[in-house]
Image (cartoon, rainbow, N blue to C red; front, side, top):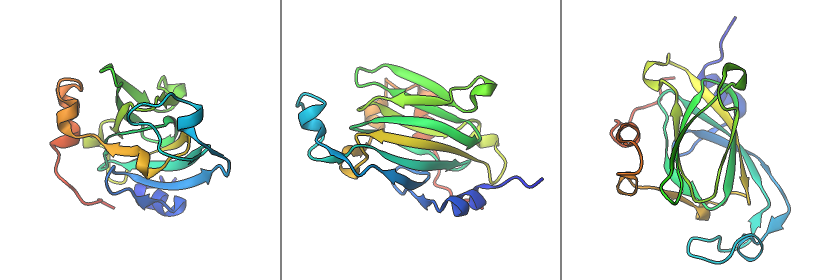
Length: 184
C-alpha cells in the first residue's frame, strides 16, 4: 500500500508555504459574520484587536519533517485538532510565564487529539522526533481561530523573549537550526 508523502499531501490539499512562521497552510473556511472583539469580548489594554474581525477562521496546517512552526503568538484563541500523519510536539508559554509541552496526535494512541491555545500565548510546533523521521514525513492539523485570524494580530517571538522561560533544548530546536530546503 502506498503511503502518501509530504509533497503529495501538500499538492492534494493545495497548501502553500507560510514563510515567516514555517509550515504549509490553506484557509478552508472564513465565517462571513463579523465581530468587534475589542468592544465586545475583552476590556481594552495594550495588544488588543484593533478592528472588526471575522467570527472565526479555519485552516489546514501541515509540517514536514524539516519544517518548524517558529515561536509566535496571536491575539485570538486557537484550537488545534490533529488530522493525520506524524504527531506534533507543541511548546506553549502563557503571558505569565507558565510553560507547557503537549503531543498533538492520535488520541487512540494516548496523545492529545485537540488543544486550545489561549490568546496571547506563545506557541512553537514541530514533528515529534523530526530528526529521525523518514524523508517525506508530515503531520497535519486543523486550526480554528476565534475571533478570526488576521495577520495584524500575529507576531513572531524573538529568542530573547523566551530565554529563561522556554527550556533551553526547545530554544535550541527552534533557533539553532540550519535553514534547509524541502527534501521532496
